[in-house]
Length: 111
Image 1: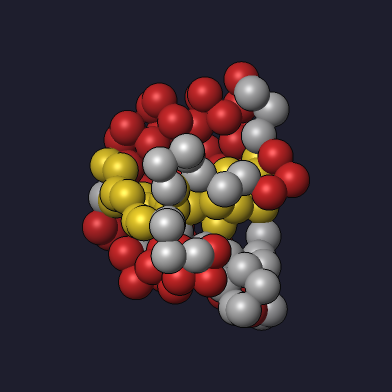
Image 2: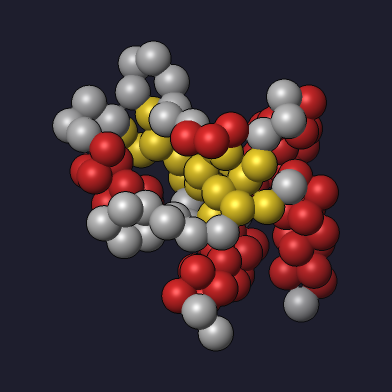
């Protein structure tokens, strides 16, 4: 399995276990490269991303239920994809459509 694949698998496993999703923002909002909104499955993962983006960025948590029921539909409406546990010096990784995320989340919750 690739590093990105392992990160994606960890994302769904960890958010189901901890019932929390993490994202990065500054006072203007979240950096959203290429119409992709990135999320992480732990505070530590999100903090590494925030540090790479710059000192003005901070991590924010969101309950899994709110993410699934409110944030994801908003992203779908705005035609954004969902970045999953991006990592490394260049913050790379997989991104999915909202429908793919909901499908993978449902599968993880049923496992």
